Image (tube, rainbow, N blue to C red; front, side, top):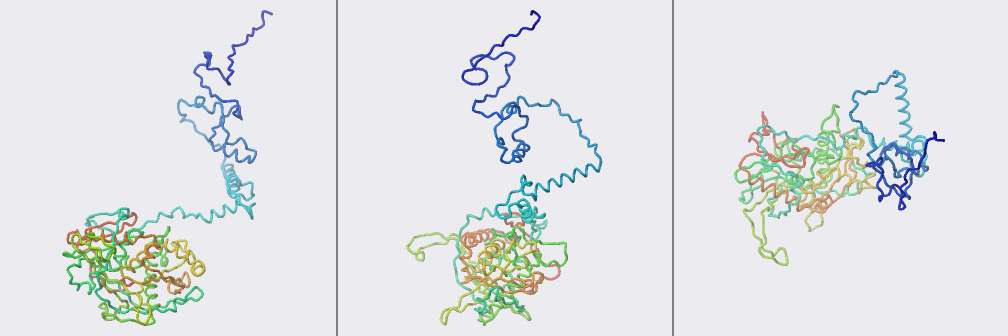
Length: 574
């Protein structure tokens, strides 16, 4: 019996207050400095040893694949996995280790095909429950094919070129030369707090011929479409420096000369997306805000503010849905539309000074004086008209040429209402750059609100310019027509589908713009230009950043090498 091994019970430390060693009794030397994870008797011990991290995707997929029986998915785990003290860490990276695939080429291709078939079943979910890991089940009718339906919807919504959306690179309207000097840059965010209101300082006269609006176009709809005729009308857009009426203004208080096209572009600068430029001529004490003949201000843009606007260039020759081609088409449509809806008669004003030789301008113009002088209140009164104000600094009057698109008779004795008329265009809703627009021929009558909301989103810059042009002209109504191609592949035939009438001030508010802020932006730019030295400058919108750049350029900039382009050329039509 003496040869048998002896056995003695070890010392047991009882812990009546919980599990594990008692804090009152020191642990044995063999277990000293070894971390211990405490737990309570109410905790659920689901694994004796778990060597997989709870955050691993493999554990998540394992829980989902068991479905309703995977009740232990997401439960907290205990043991060595909960402490980093038991995690093995290699002393040195085994960089020399590499895994070599010794399989043949046939075995490799077979393995790739097997993985592809497994991925297809998992994503598409053609068998319903078999694809539940990656696809979402469709509730309601046809739920058994939920995986394939979701996959089809995803493929339809996200195309292979959708990754390039929102990354459309725009080009500058004019490339700055090396001898251009950057004077100042203004970010759009700095213009948000500007506020001003210009005052009417009188008229300089009305010139040209204004047509009478035909009420028959109030009844036009998609079912009562009217074809748009090519009237051959000419509507010139002469710049301020070449305007004979503006050149004859002798009032010394008038310091700024411009057209409504240029001023409206500056007022709508913060909502513009495409590049544009304005030529500033500082001559003595006077300031001329001009445009370039054949520049971006002569052509209305199409879907400028869309998420994916029309491309400027293309590899395909003769593409008719490029941005320059659509702008030329929109210019011709506006010219013909204004002439067609105002063909019921005409009111003659003073002779149009732009008529020379064979060129005949069919437009009517109203020359106005706007007071941009800064004022301060001297004495208050109950009515605004009786309040006394005084001018701060030098007075500043702006002479602007505005357009009268047409007249609307309002009674025998009343003066006819002045109209500002333009037309929105739709080319091909399936083409790139259509802006996800609705088909006007199907939705204009039944969903006009949705159509107008889409156009406000895709053409907010163009609509803002039209609204500000109507405000500058003091027009009573802004009438916008809807003109669409008869065939998406024919840019020569169009049809009038309807129109919408707005009050200019209300339309500015519907576009989400502030009229006082627009006047403030224009006031700030005019004050900035009046402080410039005598010379020639260019205000241009940065094509890819929300800011305006002011350059000083040589006097010969934009002059043609041979002959200067005639201001009354076809390129100057609108």
